[in-house]
Each structure stands twice: as structure tokens, then as C-alpha cells.
Length: 442
Image 1 (cartoon, rainbow, N blue to C red):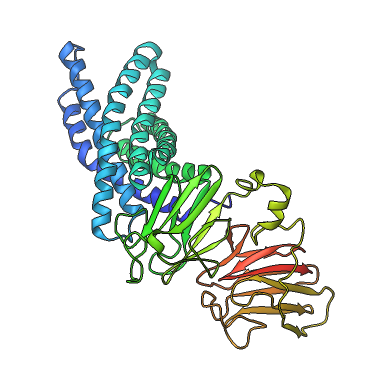
Image 2: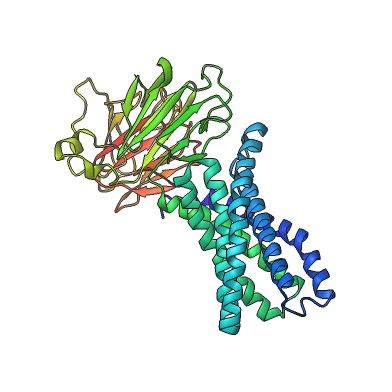
């Protein structure tokens, strides 16, 4: 669960609920009007045709509206032009799949109701709404990535739509039907679809990028395309705004098997962990620098390690992976500081393995050590511009050392995930700002 972006799950859940309320407001008056007119009294050929036409329109409308609203929620901080164009794609794909889903769903629903009675009605509606939910999910997935990502979102929409459809019937049985059950049912169904889309994507993702700086700080982009474009253009896959030194198509990330390569386009400037590059293979936890922006690359642990030889694993070991063989500190001059805290047992030794303060070493007696750019910090990292003034602290409680984030802007990272606290063990590596620490002893 450490790779789940819960803020996005909540956002898409709320967006789905809003979509459900809008769908209810549009369609419920039509249903009420039909109920007041006595509904369908005879199953004629024209009546059956009307059922299918209504189902197609409902499926088309629901999937299009759901996909469009989920897309807007996911791109809320983007410029209007990007939102509108992406939303049009989501609405178009959602409408197409939703229309087909409506017809299929109505067919399945009719067969199940005729052959299965009450149980058949529940199963039929669950399957029908699952297919419609899949349409809404596919719309946002395709608009934001590729058919591969669309398939991930389609699965999420199918699961969420099915859950919502089932709950719709359960609520209808409990309340006797009517507007109240439709109000809650549509809201639950669309909210469940939004939540499932976000969860399935996060569970299935293999590679992703998180923005560390600027107005879109914390925004994540799942990498599914063979080539992902980064730049100032509003329609690139990962847009970076507010920096004129970044060109419209500045860099690209290419995926080939388990290898992920980043390179500047036409010689545009790109750095990896502060070092300029023209093209480089990314490792989990690397910081990509483009103009004034910093991005962090994430890859599920084990995704690439299994492809390496033993020697390659030693050479490419990163701060995010618990060290099985502790790397040697770089052979440059080091600075060692000794601070005394409240007497107790245990001694903490740290080495900075990457960043502006690389090769500095620290040894501490038990107590509390703060990390930051403030002059009063025990670990002073004044040259690391991505670190807050009082960024984190490490505390000894008599039995263990615990690393804690102090509400910093760019967070504390362990094994590629942002953490609020983490118990340190020998060999652990953690990232703060541009700096990568190794725990030598506790």
C-alpha cells in the first residue's frame, strides 16, 4: 500500500460523487415522469427498441460525464487549454465505450431478469453498471496516457461500476426504490468508480514521476507510453510551467523493457542528481533536474533489480533500497562532526552518499538531531536548496533511532516512498532534498 496516492484516490472519489449527483439531477426527472405515466405496460417490439435506445443514451451520458469530470479533477491545476482538450478526449472515449456498454448492459440485464428473477436483476444491473463504469474509466485513462493506461482505468471503472450497481440495488430494496435510492445509488456508483480507477492505477503502475517543485508540487504522472514528453507545452505528457528556460519539448523518457532512459531533446539541459547528462538510465529515487524544476523518478522495487547481474546490483544500488552490501564512501575529503546529547546507549553514524554535501560524515551520541538549512541544526545542509530550514529530526528513545519529517515541503523518502517517520537500521538509505544518507551504525 506504500505506493498508493491516497490524495488522488480521495480526489477522484469526490469527483465521482459530483458526477453522480449531476447524473441524478439530469436523469431522475425523466424517470419520475415515466413512473407517473405508468411505466411500460406491454413488452412490444417498439418498447424493446425504446429500452435499448434509452440504455445506450444513459450509458453514453454517464460514461462521458464521469470520464470528463474525473479528468478535470485530475488536471485541476493545469491551464484551461490543456483541461479542455484532455476533457474532450475523455468525454469522447467515454461516450463511445459507454454507448456500447449501455446496449450490452441492457441485453445482459434483460436476459438475467427474465431467467433469474430477483437474483438475476441484481446480477444483471451489477454487470451492466460495471461495463458503463469501465467506459468512464477508459476515457480518463486514454486522455492522460495511452491505451495501456486506459486498460488499467477500464478495469478500475469496471470494478467500481459493479460495486456501485450492486449497492444501488441493495439500497433500492431497503428503501422501496424511488428518487432517494436513485440519488444515493448514482452517487455511490460514480464515487466507487472514481476510487477504483485511482486504486487500480496505483496498484498496477510500474514507473512514475513526482514533481518536487513549483505550483504542481506533489503531482504524480504514471509512465505507460514508450516515449513520454516533458516540457513547457501545455499538451506534453508532463508539463512544467513558469520557467522560460524550459522549451516546449525539452526532454523525453523512453521505456524499453525494464530500462527507463531520460534524455534532453536537441541538447536541452537535463541533470540527474545534480550532474548534467545528455542521456542516462534512471534508477528508482533519482532526481531529474529540468530548468528550475526537480522531478523524482519512482520504480517498483524489484522491477529492474531482477534484470541485473550481481555486480550491476552493487554498482546501481540506490538510497531507496536497504543495502545488502554497504557501498564504500566516496574517496574524497570528509568532514566529521561530533555532537553530544543526553547520555544513553547507542551511537548513530551517517554518511551522505549523494547531493551537494556528498561524502560528509556525522556521528552522534543518543539524543535528538535536527536536519535542515537552519544554522541551529545538528546536520546543517546549507547548500541543498530543496531542504527546509528545519526539515527532519532523528531521535533516540532508549532502544531505537527514529527519523521523522517535521512538515517539510519536499518530504523524507525511504525506499521511494514519502514517509512521516521511519525506524533506522544499519544499511538503510534515505533521501532528504537532494541529499542521500546511508546509516552506517545505530
